[in-house]
Length: 116
Image (cartoon, rainbow, N blue to C red; front, side):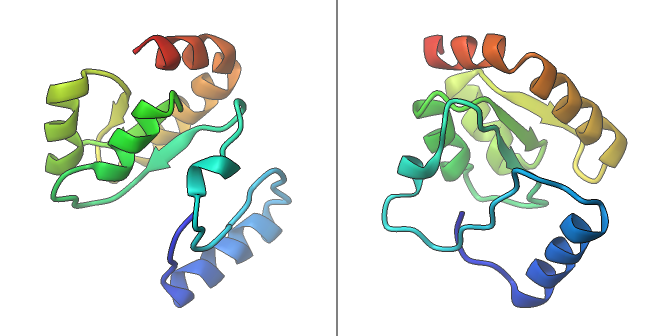
């Protein structure tokens, strides 16, 4: 959800197609993005840099289980909310593991997110 770098969006679309991925939506800008989020969604923010993880904070406030990179903005937001899963920025294996585990434990994570 949100704006895309056109070249990167094409790379993502090619990856989705090449790997026959389903249940992936690239929604673009939305007036009310959180209305699109379901109880089966995860928020993933692989940003290398954030000034303050505002979208991460919004995900937490909406009870969406979150996986974010360990950039300074996400870490500063985590100091306030103390919730969410972090991976080392650029560590694809760690991110893949967190995604896999989050999908397996989605119901538990959703309950924990709502309580947080």
